[in-house]
Length: 312
Image (cartoon, rainbow, N blue to C red):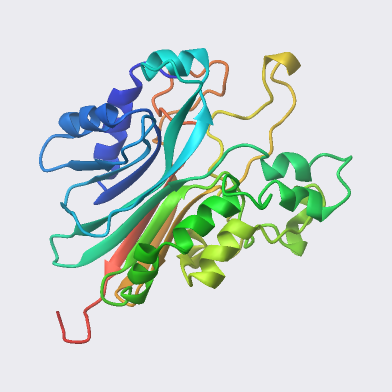
């Protein structure tokens, strides 16, 4: 909700100049085409087939046709959604995850995945509710034993045959998985800082599944292992207070909910940082003129590519 938002997205992609970008909350594939056209050069886009594509991948390198999957979810369509998606349906499909293979100019092929997990039942809200007395109550918001919860969405990706194949080949063709998880990390909510988290130390299940079941590495925590010195809160740039019903006076819990995970012997993270441009960011409700267009910080990770065993 900023002036000239698409222009500003393109501006900041050009400033950072990444090889691959994972996007979330992408309304339609046409928006991706608009962004790539404005980026110019060899930029290409990949999105899902849902009415609400939601997630997208941009890259300066070659998108291969092999290894592509998508997961679909139904979401309740508001009257505004029905207008913007040109549908009379009360629900619309959205992609919660897509993947593709990307051939880098170096000759290395990367299996690249982007996720946007469900935003409802946000865990930190429950953890900071003084009436909540059970950790099970908090975790239920993450895992309610249905496919629609965050654990269900991550599990669908983890159990997919293409993802399993990608993991098995990761030392040759590395895996990178990015996204907005709408959930904190089990590496962050520890005993030593629980006073910042409503008094709780919680092993948040989505990040734990990826690191322990899929053996992926959280690139930000690899570079910044101490969550007390470097909390890395990616949410939010502008959502600092609860809304107008409270006069924007009650602080919102800030947390790290965006991640770049990786696996593969040929990748080594050399840097990982939050990015929101250099200009001052004004919180909601006065954000309209902000230069940086997102309510999340971007998480940027630089990787070095190590030689393969055969020297290539």
